[in-house]
Image 1 (tube, rainbow, N blue to C red):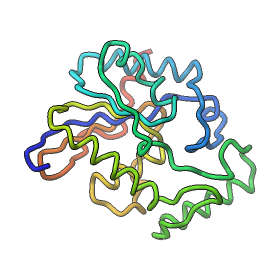
Image 2: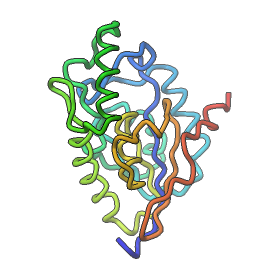
Image 3: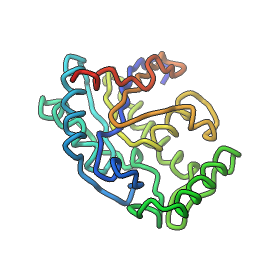
Length: 208
């Protein structure tokens, strides 16, 4: 990859109804954007439609495609990579937000922070498992030197893990990468290393 130079625009998908309600979706809930999410998608397009994207990569979940659909409609080629899917939260996906589930999530986050990166919910995925498929997706994205400017739309927890991989940080540092719906992380690759040049940028969403 030494002679490759790339700029990656990495965004989290727009808001869904479950986001709004604070209910975890994960890999197993293929939800649609709500009205606010569609508004965010349009604001992002309005702000970045003049960037000369060579290719778009999205997860296999439709909320990522809906978030960047205006770019696809403008003729930019796209590819779905399931490696970009959200972390699977197993039995907790789509479940009501109760004190018990909140406690379970807090404990799992503590485990991850402590470096227990194989920990996961029943039927779910661990950070280490997600990292394996993310590295495979990244290999595909980086194997096209002709795609110099790339737009990637993915998911919150998965985005945090990918940022750790790109910056060579342990996955337990994932909480260092804050995000909200349809924020942008801009990352450059100079042939040797990735560098985050813009983090958690939501300026395009202020255009109201």
